[in-house]
Each structure stands twice: as structure tokens, then as C-alpha cells.
Amino acid sequence: MEKKLPIAPSSKSVRLTAPPSRVKIARALKVLLQNKDFNSITTAEISRVAGVNEALIYRHFTDKRGLLHAVLADYLNDFVSSLKFDLKGIKGAVNKIRKFVWASIHYYNDDRVFSKIQLLEVRNFPGYFESETYQIVRQYAGLLLDIISEGIEEGCLRADIEAVNIRQFILGAIEHYCLPAIIFGYDIDNDRVADSLCEVLFDGIILKN
Image (tube, rainbow, N blue to C red; front, side, top):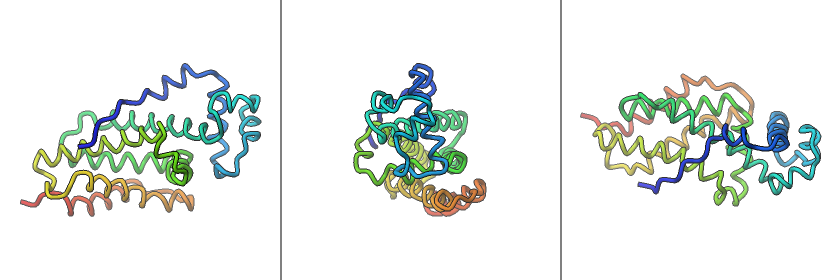
């Protein structure tokens, strides 16, 4: 079992206490990312869209990549909080995994700026995996690991496959299903994709009587 990480603060509470100029800059980057890739966006463009002095970007975020991580952290905090809420009241690890898969695909499909940042923009930068933002991703992954471990303890999932390996398979499959839609800009049939993924998954890990 991986070591549990502290829960990240709610991004809603962070936004409520953030200086107005910081919020404007973050929103400006989100707007620009709708039609441009991160590397082609300049700090001058961000400041112009935000309606603030360019120097404020460096005051609030250190640099452009720091801004990107802050925006991603906002998205991830909201996503993890929503996912935890959605899982409340769901009984059984298999049902929880289904909900986890469906909700993850839905979030990637619903907000393409988040998807672009998470799947395309940050992972080619080695510093991402040492960042505070990545720790929120580990919370998301840790939530799934806990559900899988619960299923093994319940006796409904196979115990001869390590929970970490099952988790990696699920996370990798979610991203593999979503990535072409993010790159080429087409909509994902959320229900169909989630059902297909779970059918393949559960045929492999559900314990047969």
C-alpha cells in the first residue's frame, strides 16, 4: 500500500482568497489554451487577455510554467473533490471502480483545457513529477488504489495481481481511450467508452467462482 498523502486544499477556497490579479491571470491562460498550445502562448498575451501588468505573472507564479501548474492544480483539486463526493454512498469496490472510470472519462471529455494540460502539456517537463501539482495526481491515483485494495479484501477482485498493477492498467486505459479525442478534438461517448473499458477490465480481475 502506498503512503497516503495529505489532502490538497480545495481550489475553491484558494480562489476565494487569491488576489484578483492572480485569478485574472489564471483565467486568461485557460482562455488562451482553448485554441493554442502552451509553448506558443507568451506572457505578453496572457497579461493582455487578463488586463494586468505582465510583471504580475512573475510576482504570483514565478514564471509561465509556474502559472500552468497553478491552473492545473485548480482543476485537479476540483476533480478530486468531486470524485470523492460522487463515490459517497456507493457500495462495493466494483461499483466504485465503475464510477471512478466513468467520472474520469467525463472530466477529461468535459473540460478540454484541463485535458490538454494534464495529458499533453506538463508530462514532457521532468520537473512536473517533482512538483506539488503532481502530488494531487498521486491523491487521485491513491483513491483508486484504496478502492482496488478494498475489492481484494472483499474477495471480489483477484488477489494474485498486485493492486498497484491493476491501478496502473485502469489509469493507463482511461488516458489511452481519451487521448485521441483530446488531440483530434472529437467528442467521447462517455457511457460506451466506460462500459467497454470496464468489460475488458472486469473480465480480467474479477474473481470467478
